[in-house]
Length: 446
Ligand SMILES: Cc1cc2nc3c(=O)[nH]c(=O)nc-3n(C[C@H](O)[C@H](O)[C@H](O)COP(=O)(O)OP(=O)(O)OC[C@H]3O[C@@H](n4cnc5c(N)ncnc54)[C@H](O)[C@@H]3O)c2cc1C
Image (cartoon, rainbow, N blue to C red):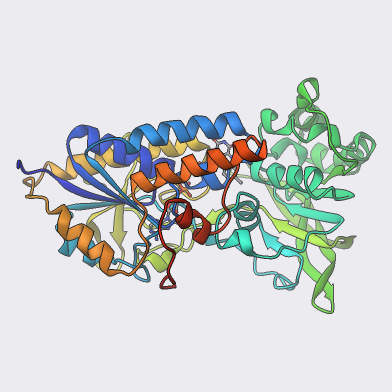
């Protein structure tokens, strides 16, 4: 058997899948470790459930990537300082480089009073819940009739859409720190929500914030276009939910009774120009919104419990990369040692949290794998011992899912969808997923 470079890719979202494929195609032997049973990351568990065509397209590409003979898949196993396998375990198994593509699994809270009240959630948890990712799929969410969503991006719109379409909330309010001209969502995503928009409330809101826009010489038409241009392609609404915006408004605290949310206190903002950018600044004027649900859709941060140094939002990258790709550093860095962590690379949302769509994560994972490949050229290929890797994985006591198991699971879910006359069916617990692969389900280490 000829020697090969041996690489571990940790995380099978778009960045990991396409990074692993790139490395496998280049001739490296790749083992892909994934926390979830299924591959796909947020393409599977973030993208809105009824985007069937898009999700099926991603799944098809992931299936093709997994089919590569140079690639082994181990699902249902966590890597990291608190995982089933540590980075040192991987090194001891002979892995010459580790590409970390674990996404941004940490939760970014603003640290406001009342964040622990029932009815206050973070978008990622809710998105994982409605996309049926265990254990979030099993968690209770108390979603009420009046919901405020903090944020101004596509994730805010996904949550608004879920609250309007599935929960049929009476009122859904987007609480936006800056003005209508600074919203971050795309026109395409707004086509799904625009039919729910209360146009009178929108015009009243535009009138309310006009002086603040005029103060920074912003033409209100800019924001009007960003919100209303989607009207020409409006998706019909399926409930009587009323969607509206609170622009130039920041959350201050959540107020509750008997542990459950009843009000959101907010502060009005103005816009100020700083280094060519428009920022928000609080005016001190506060008011309350009567809501029973608040969802923070303010982006995510990396989870540094994996054991890589982070600056609270992102893993720290080597500021002077040895192998830059398009001028970007993909190298993990230890600020204490003031040196790169030689064999660890980061890509996708693990490199830059909450940055862009699947296509962006795909490109980033691919670029990260190019940096890995350049690093590998500084050493000799090794005699790969995949049996030792398999033994070690088995010794964790986890019920490991292989590519063949993923195929069985997909076939079982497709058969179930057909039986039930559904466009898609997903098992919502690990036990059901494992059983669908034909495994006898045993208690798993937590
Ligand atoms: C609500 C929402 C909606 C979105 N909608 C769209 C959309 O409609 N269209 C679009 O193009 N993009 C959409 N995106 C963006 C897209 O999902 C992301 O760009 C992309 O999934 C990020 O890829 P990633 O591989 O970096 O991370 P992720 O997709 O987060 O993948 C991370 C992977 O790492 C694994 N992992 C985590 N920790 C560990 C560990 N310790 N050990 C092993 N494995 C681990 C996870 O199981 C997961 O499989 C959406 C994102 C969100 C949040």
